[in-house]
Image 1 (tube, rainbow, N blue to C red):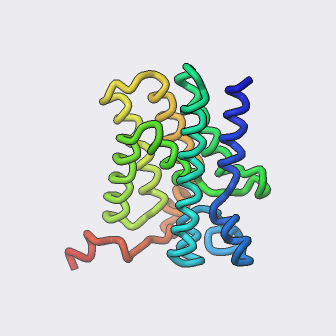
Image 2: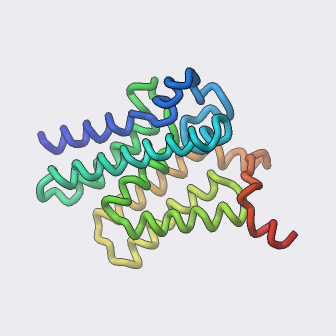
Length: 203
């Protein structure tokens, strides 16, 4: 019963979307602007860096809190903190408080990893930055960053719980970024040209 309660709490925490909560204070729903997504990237593109920073802090924080609560109160259930992390990510993507239309889950996943698997959080951020600098595509950067969790789990003999979690969230990030992949195939995916430092260095 306690495990179910912790998973429900994790999902509800995940459902507290940073961009939508902050948007209420500003009188704006960012799902009606830009890409229509409630994540940090669309927040940056449509509302500016301060709004986006607040969005990211809320989304990362709720993932960290959900994982910490399950770790602190979950007893000896080794799988529970990772399941809670997954529930928080699910809540972010399908928030019950916001009509089940949320973001894509990367920030919330990062927050959970900071608590449960700090090495993976660092690798994920590093991979994301490298790909973003190289190509300027945020969605592709996020997908490839998530994919690094699987070889990391194998290389560090992380155990079955972390391996299953790594595979699951990597695939889920591909699913939540499927529209980005479709736009990439069509050649219409927008870039963040300002961060393409490698291209600038060659110019």
